[in-house]
Image: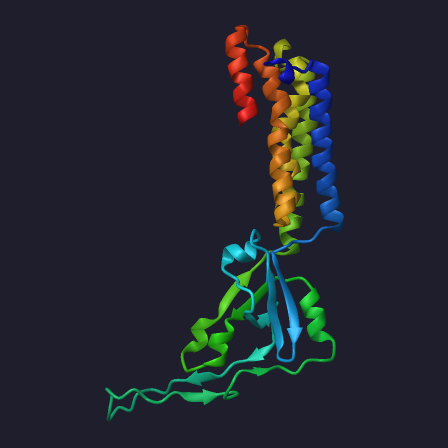
Length: 257
């Protein structure tokens, strides 16, 4: 039963090193070529931009963005001019009578005129922030509907920049951890698990750029690498259990978790 889990110290060290190298390599690729993925795709039509697709596992879906929503503002660029209303002060002679709101701007939602190709550029570009509205609310616009705007904010490239800062302490933890344990400074008994222990501790930091993309596939991959990085350390520690029955139970628990 335990044979399938048994790995010698050299094999555990090699596996831990490969996992740490994969985590670091993928994160560097993401920082060089990757982008933040909020999980939605915009498209154009005759009246402007709308939400064409929402990834069911993406951040946009968790925020409540739905397919078909119209884009009112994108990254500070106004795309639809909405009717707005001013509310005059009540007449002192009739304070109980609410004054009629005064229309300011267009009487109906009106697309903003943009240069040719600008909508396509915006649709394919990065989404940092957006104000959205449901088509049904847009079609039946009435005074007071300004509150119907649905605003979302995504940190975009800044999230990747912040995540890249985690690589330095991650690398320091990996290299210094290996040096500290392998030289016996942490105790002779820990020398055989120097690299597995350092890799297990450093991998959550090394995969931060993967997690910061918010792409479901990369987030899942980063989570799996974090878990897999613990296995060589767990197996090395389990071998220290002298009782065969107890060791078998621990190894089964490791496999299940």
